[in-house]
Length: 256
Length: 259
Image (cartoon, rainbow over all chains, first blue to last red; front, top):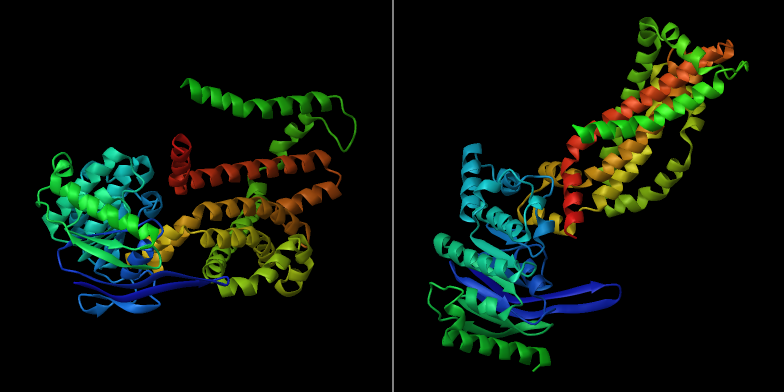
């Protein structure tokens, strides 16, 4: 579904040359939920923006369903960390979710149905008429997720979407992502710096090195499909996986 | 009900005091240029009859509306182009700074040379003065579109006219309105000034006529009417702004409650 091959990104500006991403190669199968985790400042966001066509790589390539990505592809939706700045404050929640659909030339009835369905599935059916800034942080991020869902993407890219919400809200949103993934069979690439979150959410965890970034390890998460915050997080297997990822990240930080 | 009455009282208090002070201070005045306010009030209904409102005030207001509209459309359109392209901005910025620094009344004689002395001249004068704050504020507003919002729009394929209408202009609208507000007061000034040169009707023309004919109380009524007109237009402006920028005031309010 998603092929990242030899991806390299070098930023050049004001006499400084920063190699954010050195050489990344990995694939994501259709319908998979993959978490990318790495030490902070390791170019995770750069990588995700290259995958989403928002940045063009210096070398290497990203292929989505066989087609080379050279701009935001129509089949991907992006959920940003900064939910407050990613929703349009002059539009009501419903209009925010509907706006991308207008570009897709869908009929009004179809748009309405998609908006209602997306808001319903993130638990915000009543909030369509509110402005985003009238909602709490967690609810705003739900709106951003609903907007992505209504867009009916093949691939959903999430860039540390829960880094700025409180712990309880975060747990709810993690379960929401798991549920949506199971219900809708979307391919999800989820970037986080939170090891527990990566292991809890992912079917596979890709551990990245410190910048300049390469893939350090890929780990299959063999936890059962039905996960919940109480039991999954105390299971011995969860602890093992978590420890394994943690060690990798620590080693990455020390640069070994 | 209480708070509304209280707010109304606050709004009316200072004007009432000022009028009262003027009334008392000028009551016994024998100075020709400084007639008692009572005399001015007395002259008001005789001067500003229905006919005069139609013959002088209406043309002024129409010219102001036309010039202001031209300035708003041109300012927002050019400002959007200049604000969206770094190269265009680099080329235009020095020229804009120069043109903005030229006081618009100076242009009246120049504009008369090619636009004649009719309505066109006056509309051009008003537009050429009003356009700068609108243009420069639009440039700043368009430049300042939040990068996360811009990326969101890009990732969802929101391009072209939809991007302009639903993202760029809406995001710049608080600043565009700041420019429009400045332009409104400039427009009123230029409306009057343009009518002081080579005019045959209009508020500015009438006030100058009264002054030249030593009809001093009548002249004062004209100045009062101008003040009232300015006040009315600013109230109207605020009503429109409240409607269009309701989201912006709400957003700022929300930001203040939870920083």
